[in-house]
Image (cartoon, rainbow over all chains, first blue to last red):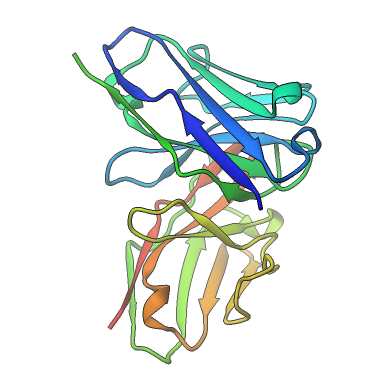
Length: 122
Length: 106
């Protein structure tokens, strides 16, 4: 059974940093792309970032480019999101999602975690 | 940036057919994926690559895509289908979601 468990969320002041983690199990982690998708309270889904199986291809939404960094450790079956210079508009539930294939673009998100909440507020 | 337009809400009686549209410029040239999200839960993939269903998704869920509109069709709607539905595509290596449609089962 595929399981994705996010952690690292919390309350942080504007301008500060936070690192999210996603622990994956139930599938061969290094065969698949991985993604972060967020959802602001009461709002829709927003793709944040994606990374290919070997970290060779990485992409970001314009809203986070230059502030967020995605990475993965295939030896630890883990995905990460380093979030710097956080803003109030980054407040959201952050989901870790598995890509359907090895490349991060073009495919669906076929499994999702339950999310970790990030609140940016002074 | 690429924009996907969904109706905010669709209502349907049990047993009837619900159609949820997703509009985008020449969306027919892209692969469209659909997600169902129930309150307090993570999204679930219900249709991928325009019209394919993941294992475990009922045949009542189907999809089509042509021209400027993709459509998710839910046949014989049940109370348990009440949820938010999102379409999603890739454009210039960025993931794009529609704004979501709330399906209400009357």
